[in-house]
Amino acid sequence: MAKKKNVVVVDGVVQKQEMVGIFKKRPKYDEEGREIHYKKKKLFKSRVNRSFGGDLFMFLFLLIGGAFMAFPLIFAISNSLKPLYELFLFPPNLIVKNPTFRNYTDLFNIMSNSLVPLSKYIFNTVFITAVGTTLRVIFGTMASYPLSKRNFPGKAVIMQTVSLSLMFAAPAAQIANYMTMSAFGWIDTYWAVLVPAIGSSMAVYLVKNFVDQFPDAVLEAARIDGTGEFRLFFQIVMPNLKPAWMTLIVFAVQEYWNMGSTIYIYREELKTLNYALSQVAAAGIARQGVAMAISVVMMIVPVITFLITQSNILETMATSGMKD
Image 1 (cartoon, rainbow, N blue to C red):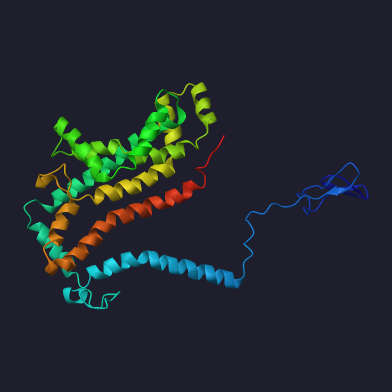
Image 2 (image 1 turned 180 degrees about the vertical axis):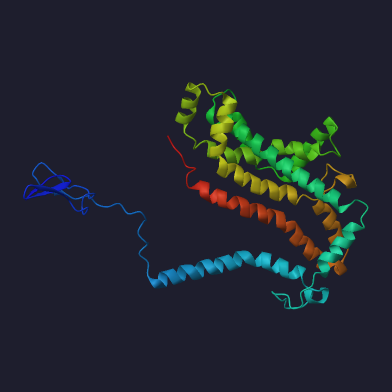
């Protein structure tokens, strides 16, 4: 019997070979005729060699840490649902015993009867938060790019000035900002709050550290292909700085959403929601339940923003450390 590639010859009659082993990979041999064996690549990494006690300890550690971090949020929500008499119990109850939405309804009724509509306060806060965050991210990133990747006279002085400005207290910076806004006639306007967002030294300092990690070879290759600087920045550099501007978004939203009374705005119709709610909470002991409801309301937007952005930050931080 003689065998060929895909047939079997038996007594001069050609028959089809069984389809067993035809598609198997043929063995390879070295120069001495020995068969070469290749190690199969594992699709998944092997599990960490840890005992059951180690797994249990890690689970309990993460559980306790998560409960500790969630405690302020749970306690605030529980207090907002407590009736007034239960707020003054000692020792305080972590979980409300007689939940009620009276605090939220009282807050809504008080704000509905104010001279300025509640919708106006909400609009001011949303507008300032959205525009201020956008300006801080765009201008902070654009300012940090040349400080990291371009050479020009005075670059070191500018970077030292940015670093030095982080040491000043906020009231000291507000005095200089007020003098500037007053000179331009922007007091009692949105510009007095939004323009300082453009010159955030914290944004420049934070983003520059990320831009330093971006490989220069990619920028040079794009310039050789004829890519302009603005297209190079917005289409190549900006998407790779996602961890940086996601972090800026978290801090900016928290700052602008919680902005209360400022030295730049005095007209009631231009003030923010946090300012209006703080005036309600300052009425006395009778409104402590309303104050608890206010704290939960003001917590909603920053918490949602963090939940949306933190997954992107964790996902991109693993690949952000690019080097030449």
